[in-house]
Amino acid sequence: MTPTLSDIEILAQQAGAILRAHYGRTLKVQHKSTIIDLVTEVDYASEKFILNQLRLQYPEHQIITEESGQHGTNHTQTWLIDPLDGTVNYAHGIPIFCVSMAYAENGQIKMGVVYDPMREECFSAERGKGAWLNGTPLRVGQTSELAHSLLVTGFPYDTGTAKENNLDHYARFAVRSQGVRRLGSAALDLCYIGAGRIDGYWELRLNAWDVAAGGLVAEEAGARVTSIRGEADYLAPPPSIIAANPTLHPQILAVLRGE
Image (tube, rainbow, N blue to C red; front, side, top):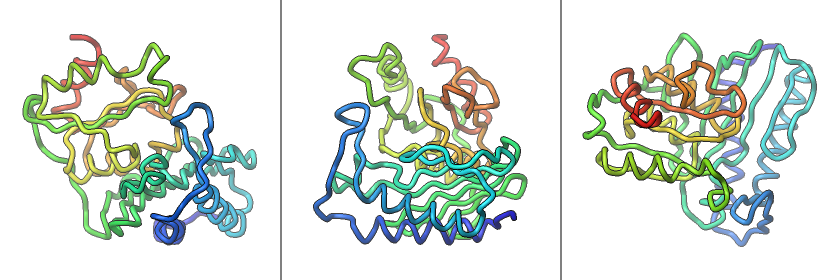
């Protein structure tokens, strides 16, 4: 059985309602790999809801989620789920977070939905058919010069110890652009590229569920989306990403290459 984009939008919005209902309450916060890699009971509640619904409606599909890993072995039809992208923001009461859901067939992302429950913004895309925000078509911005661009990025959880921590790239872009933002949600970063709110995005050392849905939104809105090496498969391990319009993308890539 194959889902429709509307099916995925409904599930994402229902999971987002769980995030919204618990937002601002006192949370039980646990640390995962590092002291800044957090998970809350709301991450688990959102994931449990999505898993239960997908197992009920698509029992033959493989599901890969951030908190509980891989479920099933059907590589033909696969879901990539982040039940709460932006957990650190959420835990601190910062209203920048979302639910991210992507559906893939034979390794290619076919549909993606990113839902921001605080703004009630539902970003969605279907490969070859376009990208939308609450039903309105999206189009990437047309800024053509790096010096005039507003960028966004993120940093790995082990920034303090990792050799590739992105701080060197951040410093270079900070003096070559209008500014660099760090919003705390990779999925929303990519959707903001598609909506033309941000001109360019790059990040190192991600997970596939972070960028699968948002990457398709950006692509279908007209962005060029690649790995930081310029490769088309930005989900190949270890995932990394550049997203920008086709004119700005090579300028970002050149800076990342040290040119």
